Structure formats: structure tokens, C-alpha cells
Image 1: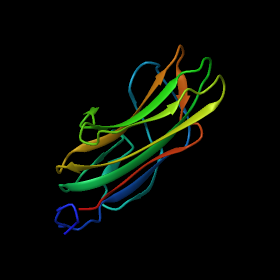
Image 2: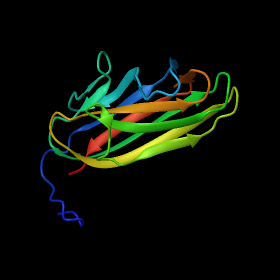
Image 3: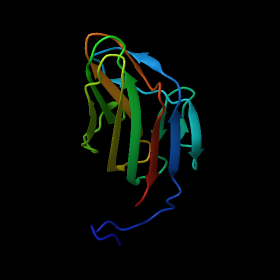
Image 4: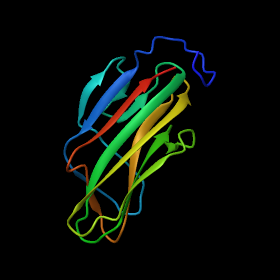
Length: 152
């Protein structure tokens, strides 16, 4: 039993790591799903980068996630945010949002986020980014990742 009172059960083999290794342009002032290009590992085949680009929990339990991305400001400085979404909506279960601040013109900013939550089997988790400014921005040009595992 965990100190928090969470009783451990299940296989705990759910773990994955996805890589973002080339940039794509996202529309400013819009939360946009990140599209990962490579699977480093996916123990239970819970990730689909070919079509949906999200993690689907195969078992109910407590999960830990981390994600990162970079943004290159093309024309103007702006705010860069990253968050998790569960089943397509803002992840209130995780209650976290990372912020990189305001990259200057033609510079890169990096944002990272981490969070833990309970998921039901079939819940889908994705990573979204938001760029505030006056132009569309290139995200992922300097790599990024999305990793997770079930811990209880």
C-alpha cells in the first residue's frame, strides 16, 4: 500500500515514450494537439502516432505523464503554453499547465509539463500547445517528448 492509501494492483507494464523530432506550424491563439513522429517504446501498444496521436489507457489506474516541446518564434514574441488533455478536453484531473514564457523574435523557447492522475480503461491522453502572439509558430523543431507509465 502506498503512503497515500492507494493500494497497488495490476501489472504496471503500461509505459511509453514518444518523440517529436521535426517541426510543424501551429495556428496562434489555438490549443493544438502535438503530433509525434516516433515511438521509442510502447509496452502495451497503447499509443497510435499513425492516426490519432494519443495514449489510450488499457487498464484503470494511476498514471504519471511528462511532456516537452519547443517553439521557435517566427515573427513576433509570444507566450508558449503546454498542457495535457484527457478525452479531448482540458485535463482537470491532472490540473497542470506548463509555461515557457515569451520567446523573443527568431529564438527558441522550451516548455515541459508533468502530472499524475487516475484514468479509467479507454481514457485518452494527448499533449496540446498554445502560442499567443501575432503570427503562427513552428513547434517541435528542436525535439520534444511525451512519456508515461502506470504506477498504481
